[in-house]
Image (tube, rainbow, N blue to C red; front, side, top):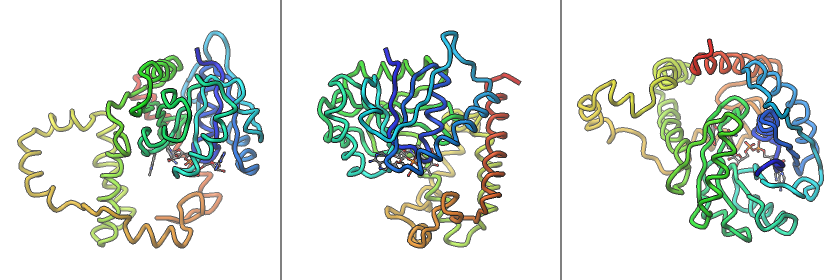
Length: 309
Ligand SMILES: NC(=O)c1ccc[n+]([C@@H]2O[C@H](COP(=O)([O-])OP(=O)(O)OC[C@H]3O[C@@H](n4cnc5c(N)ncnc54)[C@H](O)[C@@H]3O)[C@@H](O)[C@H]2O)c1
Ligand SMILES: Cc1ncc(C=O)c(C(=O)O)c1O
């Protein structure tokens, strides 16, 4: 039974994951290599807990869990039943973490990666007892989005997938088991198909970035939260999809590299909210207000989708 969880990496995803797991009654120890990240995570925890209260996520009868921060990786993983690796999307950084923890954990400690899409089979090559490694892909913001993908690599033992799926379910979240270890799994294959086309349309001057967001959020996003893509095909009619896709698919972006607009911005350290500028610009005050407003709206939408309003 999983009771003690170590989270390695406290950037965008780690603090929300820690808060959500503790709300589910689990004992979390959270570690980052950067002291500033640990400090920031500490201050984000209270914010995430407030959002969980607003979502109405109840504490289990046995009581809430805890989150403890540490700057010592051995302290973080020692005695853990599950280690969730949550460091940058770079195989060599992830492999370094696996090498470091290998001698610090029991051979049956489950090691999950929150990778956005590196095949689990590739990551398994860097850890002993690869049968205990599994993909556990959360969606951002992790304390609000209830769906988590679970992915087996070629060497993952089937019972590890079941254990992680059951853990997710036991704390009131929604596991989706992905049946093949394809790059990007399912969520990001679909998201990146959309993002590739969106970036291409803006880059080609077909639409302004603000208008692209209005078009997708109100034309597609709002609807797709209620009617998933497979159900949408039935609602539109497969004959319509057949006719439109027969001429449109060939015209959609099929670029297999990173779009120049994105390279230009990342080379200039314009990374989005975390650097104050990306597709749009953000002052610290705007960022704070935006994050609060987005959390409030996501909470309200989720309560309605769950039939709780
Ligand atoms: N950002 C998202 O929307 C999102 C969503 C789902 C999954 N993911 C995936 O989750 C993982 C983490 O993403 P993120 O956006 O939180 O990244 P991030 O860059 O915001 O944070 C990564 C953190 O890892 C820390 N770190 C780096 N090397 C480390 C090491 N050796 N040991 C411990 N900590 C270390 C960094 O200091 C940083 O705080 C990635 O694999 C990413 O693809 C990201
Ligand atoms: C752009 C982008 N890339 C990856 C992920 C998740 O892995 C997300 C997300 O969860 O929202 C994302 O927005």
